[in-house]
Image (tube, rainbow, N blue to C red; front, side):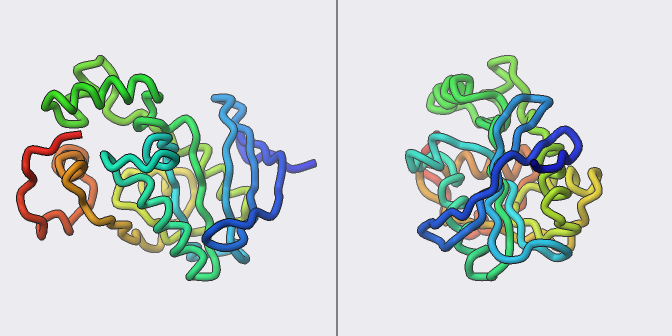
Length: 213
């Protein structure tokens, strides 16, 4: 019924009414990993300069409202920004839990962070990669949706580079900065200092009180 885009197949499309507005929910299957994926599109997203968020799955942040990361806040902010813009798309990327290590390993890494390690040290101590996410499926989905270039809402330069390598133009990297909390400031600083995330707003926050997720 639907075409393939690379190794990704569109299997469903339905209107989805949300707190943020009425989106079109488009479901895909990644035939490489077997993951089920979803895009939430708002308005006409074919063409260029489309406001876009590649959102990595985070059960603890997105569903449970964990204060140890900024994922839930970013998800809400991105959906709200797309609806306010009147045009845009959010790709909710499953299989990206814990930057690709999975839910239970992520919880084990959080245990080590509670003992004083930062997020990079914790992954490495478990013998796991710091970040194993792949954005090939995201590029496939964007190609299928007719998106030629994006204004990407992200603080992570690797997402922009990944899309460019796969033929999706990036017109602008739009910061998606959330208010730091005592529970996640150490985590955010590690992402900036160890992983190159663009988080300039952290410079204006007083030193944390040794709060480590």
